[in-house]
Image (cartoon, rainbow over all chains, first blue to last red; front, side):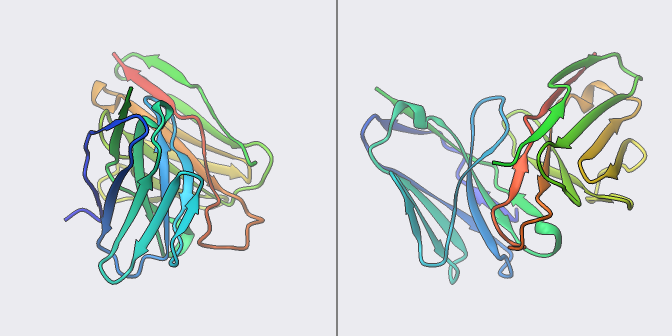
Length: 110
Length: 120
């Protein structure tokens, strides 16, 4: 079993719609959780951290469920520019070692 | 925000030669840098953790003698792919953690722009 698993997609989303997807992690001792965005052939960029109480940043909402060991990302009012691969990233242990999920590809279409 | 620079962005080399990739933290000091590799349509895979002034810690399955890592200063880590072969062609990305950040588990990992290596 992979340490961090994601549905690879693609999620085809009409512009303006809402899309949500999850990520599961296997290490119950994980301490930190993030969503990164990666555009084609580019480096990942931090989208948002995920806090225990859930957090929102504009159209993006992240949730953490420690009991079931998953995190989620919801995108409201999708824009064409939201098309990207969203990487679930889990950290924990010494040195801030991060483990990346395989990514979920989102395609927003007009 | 903090900036991490990688060089070169693109490199093409002949099979059997060695290639060096640099990762620099431009406006902060980084005791720890991480090197990742990403094959097409796959996730980033951690190759090694580079510690300033000491030997790198390699992940299982990563050949130490093939992927030489040097972290001689607080702002520079280098990855050298020795005797490169076509199967080493990949996207290599480094990341660095800001020494000043007290939140050990915080979101303070900064990525370089990545380096595309093609071995022909």
